[in-house]
Length: 265
Image 1 (cartoon, rainbow, N blue to C red):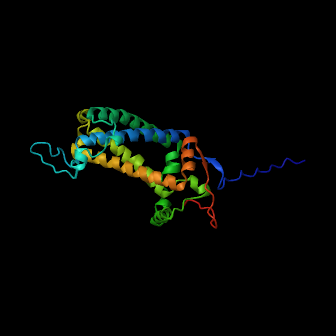
Image 2: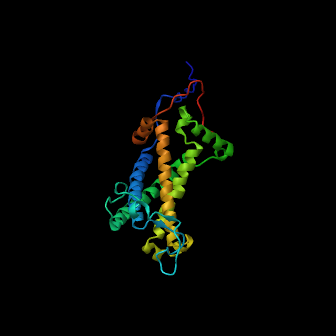
Image 3: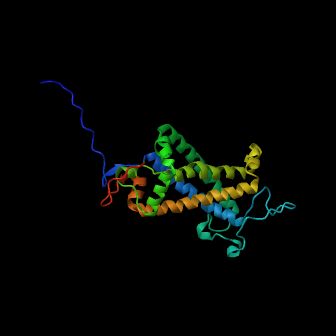
């Protein structure tokens, strides 16, 4: 009997309805740790904002004698001068000192987790393989196609659902490389200790009050991302999406009736 070698057929590709592995343990840990840290920082940040509910551009702000910088955002007349109610702040009672303690403690956690996740993403290839947009994906026609599909609530099915589409990549990239680093950098700029160690940061960002304004803009950008993200999870199937981020297992969405499986660009 000849020993002719026959190549084994490749395993069948998963299809709509199959349960597959989607998120690694590192990604899941990053997701939930990031959620807790950012939530605590946002809620404590609102308490800090309540202490002076105005934002300025420049170095000093209107409280400094001889340097009257008008506020571009003034919420001091909202809710009796306390714009954010106790149920959404940490602590729930007014305490600027306690709010700062919560804020700085979780800022360290957030900074370390971001650094660790980005390092792992670079070493493992996750950053290049899954998050970096390919040139073809950045074509205006492809971006517009993705926008139209989202507006029609037509989400990828089958294997295409395992890959990030261009709007996801741009959104996650904006969070990982703009909003979170921006919030950390502007927060450091407002720290007196960092001012002494790196005094040029204040000048680069246009002053302490400009840094404070940018800090809150980054924070509200994260809030906007959170609400859009939650909306997409609900529309795409919350049980399946949350399970994949808890256990790593994801059920591929079945093909829409009358349509072939969609492949990512």
